[in-house]
Image (cartoon, rainbow, N blue to C red; front, side, top):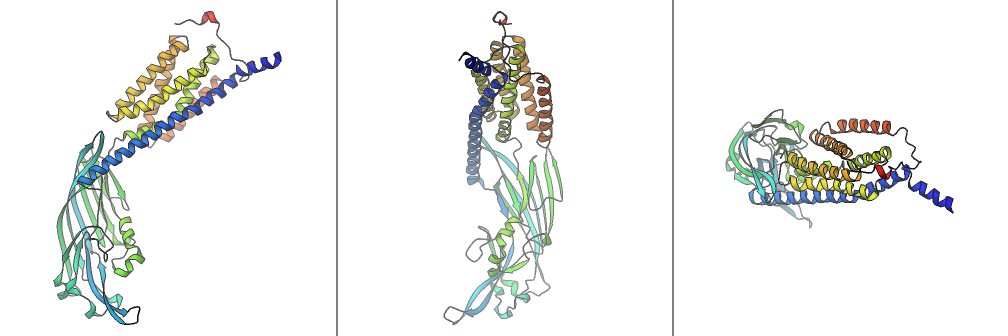
Length: 435
């Protein structure tokens, strides 16, 4: 019986058993880390809701398309009873050329503590249409209703349109007198309010778009990137040049063909433009930092464990748990402070508070100020390393992999002679004195 109890005590005091207990604590602390991650998602959702509220009163992201030349024509057929019937259908024609030139004036708006960006765009549209041709559709000339033709600027909705939700119509009663070789030029100015993004559909057989703005952080998006762009702290300039051959929809179609050809989704998919990107997104950076939370727990616990192994200072699992809790609270501090201050300052305050808390606690549990100072230095290096990773998005994986490899190499070197099954060395009581 005594031998069994002795074996249990030896197992409980072994280095390997202590490692298992620390691993269990790491798993347990994943719960508060997950709760912080959920809180970040909730705050992001509230930020999106605030941006939507601003957009509802100012203007949402704008998707601009048009103009479209529409010519009605008569069709002949039979109804369900077999009687001859006539109905009106519509043919759509896109411009031969389209040029958009404009200036986007941004403005930051706040709803509570949340920030979003809105803009006013002043755009000049110009281009031309070729004379509409019906030859390929076998439609009799007398069935073409030239006098009822109209130009749709940002095509209005309606049962027969089924393309856009809002816009303007301009009647073209003089189109009937035109000739096959005629071209019809157009130009107009458009001022619109919007939020965050502005996109244009390349309706022309040849479409050019030129945009400029004092906003210093654009994100060019959509089906086509600009052929040339210039971004400076004073703003950006961008120019697109898109050929009709790069689109998935034709230059003309009939109304009954639109659904089969999926014209509306194709038009929307071909849009391109710019997002007025908010460069400092504290929620994204905080979310990225939480992903390193497990690594921080492991490395910090490993540092305390090595103190136990090499100095003989015994630590209770509850002390590990309290230190881990402080590491989790760091992310909550970072999230709450970054909503009211720049992310860099919020990170500095949260990291300094956490290092001071754990360093002060370490002075008591490790029985020495020098050990506590070394613990604080280790944590300071870890938080500095994490901040660098958050700033270098493109090289974060490379730098993170190299850092982890070096840390693992150091730990393997320091623990190469440890007997993981032997009892941990304990410090004599007369040595356990502060200082």
